[in-house]
Length: 120
Image (cartoon, rainbow, N blue to C red; front, side, top):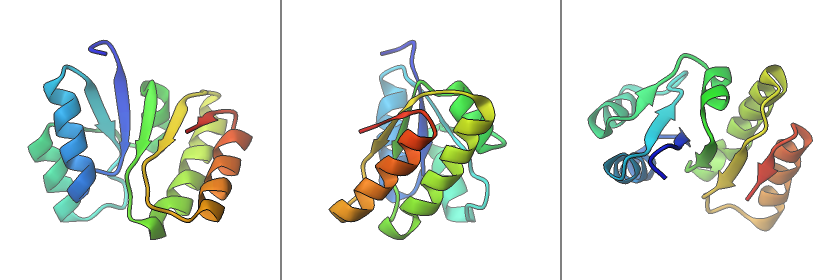
């Protein structure tokens, strides 16, 4: 997997650890820290996760996108990703790693697949 680039939403307490492990195994890990706080920015920096300027840049460069967020942020983040996917014309695999209700997962899947990407 060393030639892969993974996009990460978001390098919080759990996501930064996942990102660090991927980096240790030769994977390039990117995130968009737009609207993120100082603690998340510091975690990303410490883990070696690269910040890109926008969600458009994130989906344009990533082969796979991991969503590791607090449940309350999942729908809005998926919406931002879907907008970026439409704007860039990219199709990637969006992996939902969040502890959300089945109904929320279906809504996330609908949002991402409507933008032309795969949802896992």
